[in-house]
Length: 128
Image (cartoon, rainbow, N blue to C red; front, side):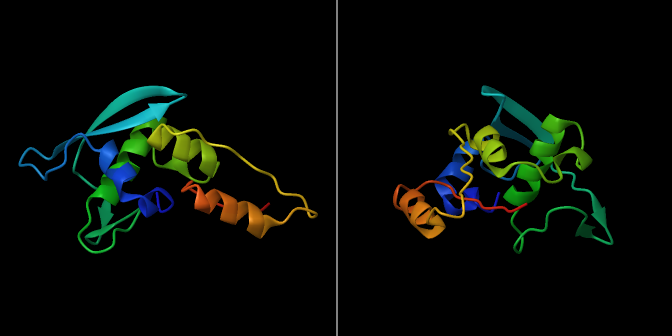
């Protein structure tokens, strides 16, 4: 989510419900295995001592908590969304293509990152 948040318009386009509402019901557009789906969920957040148990928002931002809850709902539980591959997660959340590049020791990693950044691609990195 933090990678997608670099492009606020991408996050906004995921939310079909854009206003906080009395019913506490929200619609979020995501993709699963390439197929668009709408996830409908409520605004009840799992908390311990009034603090969300999973993702923490920056201040009173609700979108982070709702997006994580929708992702967990698609996968059946919060436990099933721990770790994973960033490129497939971004693809399924946004509908945009996702690619994995494995950079060898002889390639210029910084050059690859700068090239993707200049094209406004979402970029995540990991190591084994």
